[in-house]
Structures are given as structure tokens and as C-alpha cells.
Image (tube, rainbow, N blue to C red; front, side, top):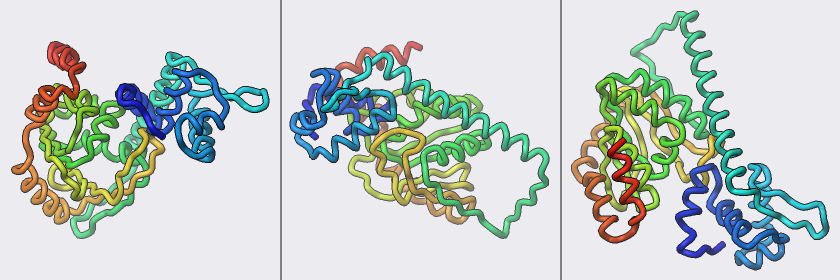
Length: 291
């Protein structure tokens, strides 16, 4: 599918509500040009009809598009305000489910007699964003000193949606969050949000190495695959979680080397603003700092 440059920001915002890039492009097209059959959509968006069917099914499941009962079937976009409210309620419901599971596990742990051992390390494979957030939130809650992260810029959007309050609480009690990423203008707002709560973020342009995080130099996650095309708790990822301190020490050594090479995110933001890539964010950035 192709998209006009002027529409790219609108599409980026839609992706933040759990749509894939193709779903966001198709939904915007229906908003702009009205109801259309799948054949016309495939022609207008210059893609295969099978691709259009898959994308439309995803939008129907999300409550963003309604199909007609007539033949040939015509697809129409749900009013933007209603569609976004539906998506927001879904995210809120998913987050409430995580909070309930968290409290249940905390209560269950009080009834158990755990016997931690220094001789063995636990290793888990994380397969979805929901599972990653479910492990990361209690890890942040129990971290005392420092949490370091090397991640794709899209994870700032994920954090803004699901875990920003936990990050803020951690920093508020004296903890440090240090992040290395490679971000472009479409992620400035989410990066700025983390700078505003006190996270130390740095830019490492062109980084394509391992993505990982380390909690208090003890617990760590490292990525096998974090190629995220849509932001949803069901989005598949592949990461390794372990409490092996030796592996955490190895990752910390890598982090310290990368940290020296990276530049402050604020410097990168100023560069992008001067380039005119995100003029619309100047006022928002000022607004964030006054909150």
C-alpha cells in the first residue's frame, strides 16, 4: 500500500491505538473517501485483493470498519471518535486484566514458601507483549537502583500506553532509568514523555545490535525478535528472560560501551526540530515541561 506524506502522522497516531500500518492506511482511506468495495480498495491502494481482505478483517475485528449487507459488499469506516473510544476501552480492559493477575500472584506468593537458590538460574521465553509487560511491571516494582534498556523506539510508545506510571513511580523513589535507542521524528512525543519523568535517554543512530534490558544488574531480558508492526498486547515477540547475574553482567558491559557512544536524546530532538521534521511538536514539548 502507498500513502501520502501528509497522512503519515495521522497513521502513526492510529498505530498507537493498536492498528498495524496497513490497517491504519486502509482505515484512513475509508475515512477520507467513504465506503468502498474491496476491489476498489485494492485498486486505490495499489495492493492485492487478498491483502485487502486480511486488513479489512483485522479492522472489522477491532470495531474500526463495518461491512454492508448488500452485494457486492461495501466497507465503511466507523466514526473516528467512536472507533478510538472502542480501542481505548480495549487497552484499558487489557491493562486491568494485567493488574488483576499481578495482585493475584502477589497474594499467592504470600501463601507460598519460596526457596531461592544461588546455584541455579531461571530462563523463560517471552512470546507476546502482554507477557513481556506482565514480567516487566513487577521487575520495575522490585528494582532498587537502576534499570538500563537498549530498545527500538516503538517501545517508547508501548511504555506510554501501558507502563509509564510504573516508570514514574520508580524514578520518584530514587531509581534510575537509562535508555539507548534510535528514534526518528515520529517517536519524539513518546521519547519526550520519558525525558519529562526523569528517564535518561540517549540516541545511537543506526544501531542494529542486540536489544536488551537489565534490572539492578541481576535480572535481564534480551531479544530474539522484536519486529513489531502493530501495538497490541497480543503482538508476538521473542525474548529471553533470565535471573542469571553472569549474563546480566555481560549485558551491562555491552550497555556501558554503547552508552559512551550515544548522544543525549535532547540533543537529537533539537537536531530534528531544526531540520523541521517535527515543527508541530514544539508547542507540545513546551506544554509537557510546564505540567
